[in-house]
Length: 118
Image (cartoon, rainbow, N blue to C red):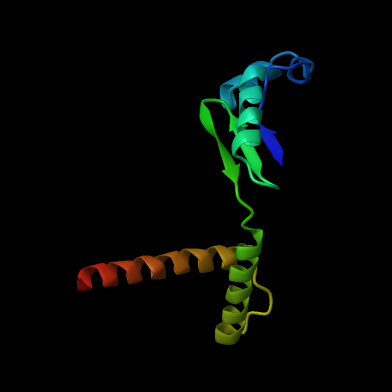
């Protein structure tokens, strides 16, 4: 298990130099160490083996799931389709984004189609 805290009011932030702490506070917020500690307790109580818990200012802690395997399989499918349909030899990040958006639109259209049938 691991905890991924955002910025906490510790010596690390204080030692960054003048104005840096204020900039971090404006942009991200700065948590108290106690708030991070409470998140750690929640990680121990609710986290599964290998869980990663994000702790951020003004946000309840949340777990980040490992979606890398699923995304890799999805993008592999996209690469194969793009190669078969268009002869694309390298599936670039722009093409991946277009494939993801297109796939989401197709799923949305399918759901609408199903819902209007019943």
